[in-house]
Image (cartoon, rainbow, N blue to C red; front, side):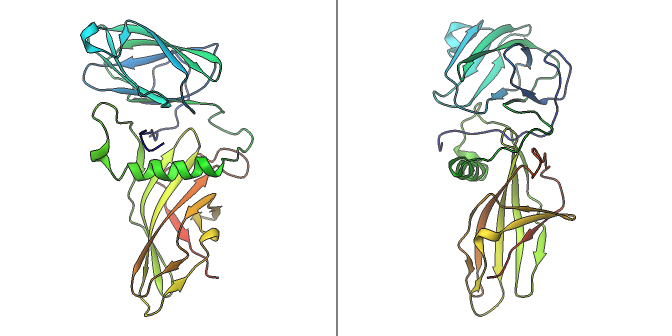
Length: 268
């Protein structure tokens, strides 16, 4: 997991595979559909699946620039994403993606505006039954969010575009405050990862219930599905926590990183 860089999508845009859409797109997986992906010579396009890819088979596509392909492919074995870039003005190509025992077809062509990121979902964009994520997946989301704080570690051309905000919004308590340092959204999992700074103004440590951390949006409360938190803020010190909000009680929540969130930090 620590070798991969992942996507966070900017817009929840569901369209038919042949439709003209925004530079960032989301599609439900359907092996009966041929997905059109727009490329350019100047910008990479990153495609992300909800799990590791078994194989990629292409036409007019190669991972080796010396092959002089129409489209250059960048992919790490075992990763759930790959990046594409056109090497010619009127480049065209095709990919068959083997994923979970099924084949998904992509049609590639250059366009005036490239798709910067395309995410393929294994559930509908809206509604659908609630899906409980495993603790391993939730931990991995936190690690993926941490990667966004280390852009220098990412490989040029393999960077996956993410939807991320650094609001700096503060929730004030009597003797401490909680600041949202960053919010990172993962579209496929319908999850937000919050990086929170906890600052204690007291001369003694402030304990809190790390398993009761939650996020508030207007009148709605979203309990953390998973949290990495110490459970105490040191005296006149600072502590950091990561917490994951995944979906909602009725299915996908589709929360944006640009909402006005506050942090719920319960005391024991």
